[in-house]
Length: 316
Figure (tube, one colour):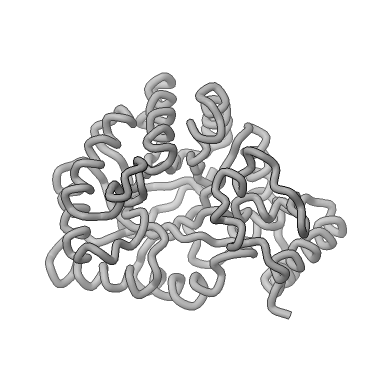
């Protein structure tokens, strides 16, 4: 699989990455190992996790798999800090002391001395931005992270961090991880993040190309959400996707997929992969078959006319 440099980080990432949010939360260790094995076999070398995923369970399972397979030198590890890791309302955010403490805990769970990418999981309005940036910069200086970045930041927030890094002589954020799909995140990406990242040389790791599963086409208007599905595990995702404009996008995707002889997920993932400025795209998986589904999208020859047709969905 094609490898790309992520901004100016010096970190190489595969064209597709595996988001490990399901590990230890939605699938058990054996299933996670099977998914990770298939991903690596398919050429995926970027594995993304966070200390908030399952309260550290995702990191633990990923770390155990890497150690069991003896493949630390073959994979790129990205983890994040900022989300809640326990039921304690205070156990969240990007204060400097928390970043330092949580990084040590993440390294222990992952069974490594350093991660390749360490991201602020979200903007923390309660902490001075320079405090967050200083702690992340220290992680690089201490050799515990090769590069840093952010996830779920608005364009102005990333821009502020880039300016602070230059003004204070700190390590800058080299990557951002925003959501991007035909159903969510397009306007922010196209009008704010992409121009900024291309201008400043920041790598872009988009996630959720299937809209947390919405763009599989399995959710219809008024359907009951199956127990254990992503929208059941995280009900807060439902209002982000379940509205009429998105249902119309699914209706159009279904017709296009039937005409082209491919699946809806193939079209949805392929569209993201063909967006200018996207360095890599993170996919989620519960089974090895989900990995194969993403590989099919990567290999799909998306013609310019079809790409334009997909880009126009939701705009008419």
